[in-house]
Length: 316
Image: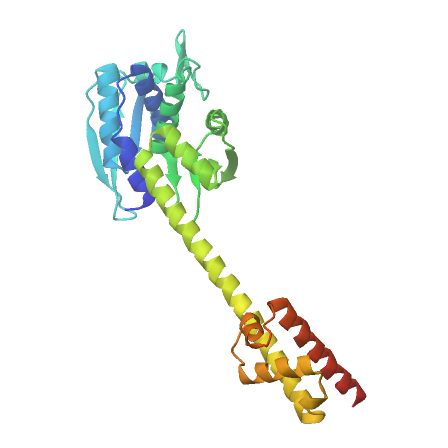
């Protein structure tokens, strides 16, 4: 099961007792997953479809609790993909589809006609708790979140440009930075930063998913830190080895050309120790001298030896 499916499963099992929040969540689910079907003059049927059985059960319960309408959930096999079932809820005109559509703010009746609206009525998202519930419903109806092992990305997909702006603005009321792009005829409201994805999961109540994501973020950060330390140590070791090889080459060159006895006593002493202890660090070399000297002193003498070798090369 994907991380997104687990998150939706958690949210589908989350029920609130507040009817205002129930209505807000249902309103978002209907807008994201619902379709309208003409059933005669000024008559509409409402069809809501989902691939998640937990979301279908939640829709059934919300419609029953809010409107006392007992619907049936029909299961249909996806003939094209031949794997996922579709769960279809149909509310006919006779069952009270008009009432639901009016309450969730989609249908506006005027005399003998009606109008379809894309704006969310202010009374539905007036309270902070209702705004959270609406975003939860929008995620259940048309949202997804990427596997945090791969990337941090959360999005809502809607077919309406107007509704995408509404959802984006609603998300950004919580000090987030959601943006909208168009993708293959749909409008995508998305968040890409890990911190913002975590905040949005917290807003809609997906606390278990949030903890899982945070654990993965911590593990990824630890792996990155370890890799950075290993890379740094590897680079330093490589630098040390290269420097040691260069020092030994300079000393061998002087030995083969003019002889080490031509070096001043302090340089000859460090040259002989370096030749005899090729794996030793600068600190260890310094402790072998009499009297001992520090790393900077050893490095200074080895640089002098390198300059001496360069002078011999120029003369040749």
